[in-house]
Length: 104
Image (cartoon, rainbow, N blue to C red; front, side):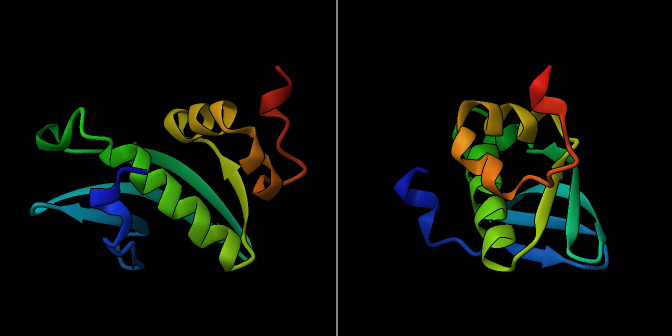
């Protein structure tokens, strides 16, 4: 993660069911669905103003760290999150064992 994003807080916007990271007044987000201790990450979106700055990657990294520290298991339905975990397989440690998408 770029140093400029390290100290920015991740917000769990429960009303919108999304994790948010606000940078320079613009908010990138990941929509989720929560069921008990399992979280389905469904869609990641970053505004055009943040494009190319690594904001979406920082959002994913902060979200995965949050999920791990709060003992959630992950179902990565979002293609961006899925691709991130494929590039960083150490994060498979928090992926729900019933998810077999990485086997294909």
